[in-house]
Image (tube, rainbow, N blue to C red):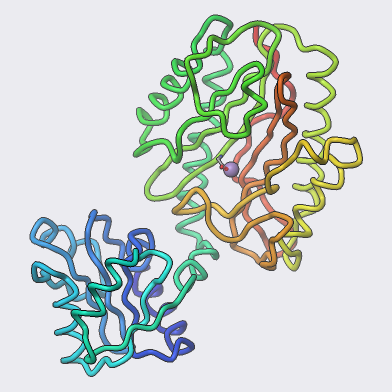
Length: 358
Ligand code: GLY
Ligand code: MN
């Protein structure tokens, strides 16, 4: 697996005009090498692939990083990078400019001096990560199943009188006890008027009666994220609750039915946005329709008004339109999908009828 990924990176390297690439982004490091440690960098040229890490990982790293020569680095790892680069004739080295802070960059530059030129690059490995292979999709299906199972469990747990944080804790325990490393982001449990907060993480609010509860959560499982949103009613829904739920559901189902390869993120976003706008709630849907999902909760491509990436088979994205009415409440419905040769296929499968919990 990592051997194929090193080959993919080397292909990209040809277009960068550098002799090597330094990988300091921890997610990209794990993707390319398989190494899960908390500290380490990769140096990859057309000929060599090194993983530099420290004493703590000298047993683990060689076990995980097939295809890499593992090197225990000096106190300052950039000094070891310099030594390796000079010995291998690497004169120009790409680095991931979106990961480094300025002070670090300044320190690298001063260590490398004139020996190695640093060339800033963006999105190189992220571009590879957009296309999930079968092994990744298998893990993501498991992560999504865990989210689906959690939602099913919560249908019989949620009731008036519970504090949002208690609900979030139950969700997180459920996922952790079934193999998740953690939740894939801070669990959102937003009830009543708080459900109008698109990102209302669980608070001390007590869930009341006759109100929405929006649950947005996911499992971080085997290095991959799932991301699921469902909105339920506790007590009795009013016509207003039903109206906005139905509009969001119509927008979400139409988007799922319409997304196919060849479409841009903007075109996919427009499917949901046009429907919500037609019903007069366009200004109450202020976020993108979806985002790429994988080793990170938010990654490329974006389904939004500025989404220029063309969707292609193997990309995994969320579809999550919403309507948020301050002072009343809000609805979001979110699934995870993979783009296929002809359209898309669902990774999550929780039901979307309006659940009324009493
Ligand atoms: N579900 C969290 C997010 O998409 O931002
Ligand atoms: Mn999401």
